[in-house]
Length: 254
Image (cartoon, rainbow, N blue to C red; front, side):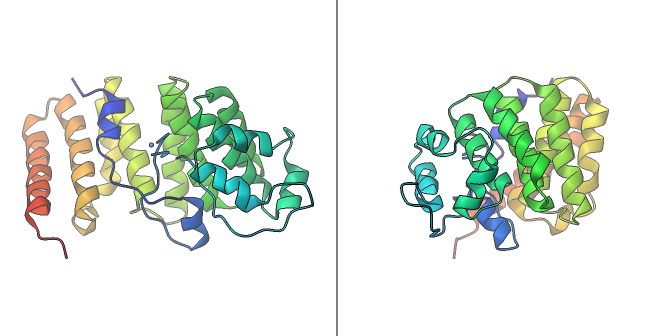
């Protein structure tokens, strides 16, 4: 049997930087906050910049500071009414970014229903595939962690991977973590062949992948092989992951 998928996925994450959408605006990705802590598993984050706002209203920077201070209720209060179209104009941001920020706040407060609604609103109006792939990932996390809906989470993780591959973004934290989580869910459901297929696209690039992620990918695929009864291949992959981990631990840091 495989490990509990939530424990499996959470145990395989590397230490994240502070924001996500900030990384998109700079044209690159590195491991962000994942989920609600990511959201340490925070969720989607937005870059804080000085933005003028009408008198009597909070600026976008002030609202973003609530996120940094984990004042999630204040974010929800500031991002009203329900339809944020006019608010986006006032704050000088795309409306999908505001829906995503409010969704993050709901998710952090474990209000899965409103978070789901806002992520879906963000996806409906987003014209940026990079941001959309992050929204799909965050929606998947919300399904898995807050709504206890692994079926919907699996579909959202797989959608994340599909969007990343469409953008030729195939070897970064986002497609890696989405695929690992999808495989963990499939493994927990006894769908080992599907879990193995989920991980197969990464076999060819495994040797060129950063050791931290290679370890995670090897273990995820090993679980699928083990579930299929292919103990020899599973053990080979587990051993490679263990060796990489030991070598990484013994390598002096610059």
